[in-house]
Amino acid sequence: MHNAPRPTEQLAAVTTASHGLTYAGRPARGHGYETRGLQYLPLSRLHEGRFGRMFRLPPYVPSDTEIQRVADLMQEGPAGGAPALNSTTIPSGYTYLGQFVDHDLTFDPVSSLTRENDPDALTNFRTPRFDLDSLYGSGPADEPFMYDQDSLVAGAAKLLVGTNGRDDDLPRNAQGVALTGDPRNDENTFVSQLQLTMLKFHNTVMDLVLDDPHLARGSETPFETAQRIVRWHYQWVVVHDFLRRTIGADMLAELLDVRGGVPYPALRHYTPKNSPYMPVEFSVAAYRFGHSQIRGRYRLNTLVGAPRDGAPPGLPTFTAPSVHADPLGHFGGFRPLPQFWTIEWARFFEVDGAGADQRQSARKIDTLLANPLAQLPPEIARDMPSLAQRNLTRGARLLLPSGQAVAAMMCARVLTDDELGLGGAPAPLWYYVLREAQVQSDGEHLGQVGGRIVGEVFLGLMAADPSSWLRNDPTWRPFLGTGGDFTMPDLIAFTGHGLGVTDLTPPDVTEPPA
Image (cartoon, rainbow, N blue to C red):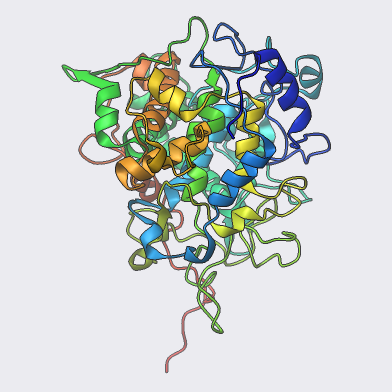
């Protein structure tokens, strides 16, 4: 039996009281706490704050029993690791680039007093932008501990890079805590290595700027010039590499109309009246497509994750019941990079380097989640270990509409009951987005509903940012790549990080003659 319609006020009260996803006492780092501004969100599209709603639709609030049923359907089971579940177009590194981008958009650099006085983020919040605040923080003047003090001359600040033995790492304090603009960028090895790569990207661009003063615009200092170049190249990667792969080239061309060499966003549904906001249909449903791309296991480099003693190749991102039980048996973060754990990026992106012949694909975007995600360790999810159950519960708690209702509102083709596989029940929006990708593109990219939500929010936020290339100089083209394009592999190649072989040979010792 499906849920009978109930008044909105009753639904809000029921979901607040009944769904067992609590937030008190969560760790302060990572995803273990509710994002500020999501604890209270009216149904009205007119609500203004850090978060808002794209669609004025009745909520679909499944019962706990229905949530559990759908979550059980999303377990990968014995098929885990089957090659047929792998994408043929998206390498696995884009899964974690998506996580890095999410952190950039949702970065919330406010004091504990502000969190206490404005828990719903109604008056004091940062407009979501692709500006790498998670990399730069508040800048070298306000957060000098993130910057190399030897480079703080003539406005040419470089970002600090740490080391652990022979491996470069994020800069850390004496307790091993990363000194970053956003602590979430240390929550697993892959996003930590992306953060490190971006640190090196800025530093390499800074060297370029110091060698060529003509790169500056107006009264920019060398740091401001390097920061603009880094941000604009990163934004180009977000749109023309990550977003193109995620929503498909056809959808991107539909949303970014290029006339006379000038791109114009063509948005139908993400149309903020005043300040840009983060739609919950995006943050709680559509953009969580990346959870289905996570592989059960990864090989980090030549050494870490190599098959041995009959064990399957690769290590999981984390292990249950605790990430502390076997520190070298998983890719969990919030710790110094173990020695010999420098990533070989060619295993994750289409870049030349060690491990390129063993490149790992992302999982297809579908309704199956890798087996480790069904049993998250208590350090990450102590009260509800299933990631699918957590996502579905959060969608119910925030009164999201059903996927069918959103598809109809967008004039997209509504998936049939047989295509959805839920026995005729309404589909939670997150589930619908995943199933739509599976049905419409064989999981290679998002479908009509998911692709348009993600694409419109990305392009809408970038177009609203007066400092972005899309708003500030839409005819600009990247110059660090080739042919006026720039991709994540180009960025990695430009920095040189993670391209060599990680092995046990000491770097300063030559092999003795045979």
